[in-house]
Length: 277
Image (cartoon, rainbow, N blue to C red; front, side, top):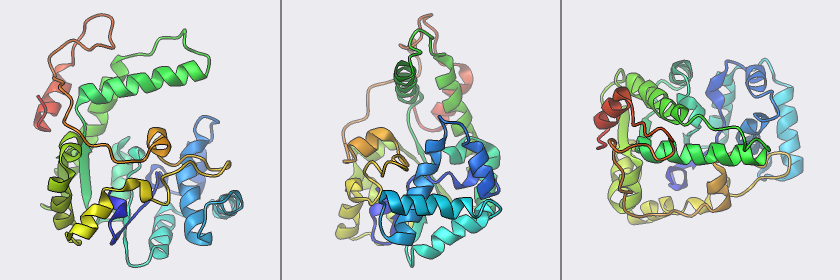
């Protein structure tokens, strides 16, 4: 949504900040199940270098990266910035918040960046992630192996804990927290507020453009050698889906857990800090 604003350029998931060098990125995602995490970066380079995301353009992007394994991710990120002209870059890889060190690296590279902390209720997040893990195991023929349901909660707590500890050290105004549920319930109310915070256009045309994520250059499945780069459900159906927040709470038993367990006290405390009940 943000990337469709006329003054912004929305990237797919580039995962710039998980390593210090391009070679480090290749090492982090060396496994067969992880190589797709480079697809967003490859598609970005193909689009910026060649103006298209064909298989040939993507292969040239792969080769461009392989020839620059010693290139720092600092230089790589600023190379991308240099290619998008006057527009500001929007980077939203989930990996940014996976470790505190990744956020620290991001901040070193872009010390004047604005940080939008978009949250989702831990129940909705954990249930969705649990379903994704089950689907992944089924595709890989491992559906007889149970998914550890408690890890979903632990992931939510870890990620949002990293973000809160990071943003509370930033100067006032450099970060903004917003519940994703509220944004989807009333984008016409919240998108102008985000635009005002970013000091970009707030007119009706600009706000309307933000409500069409399907118009992104990266809103479709990519070529065979770089098919991913964004959440798969988004790639398969990139339209904005608005609606009222789901009726969930922090106190009921977790429906994906067979032992009737509930959220732990640390999760409840952080969720309440973020405005959830």
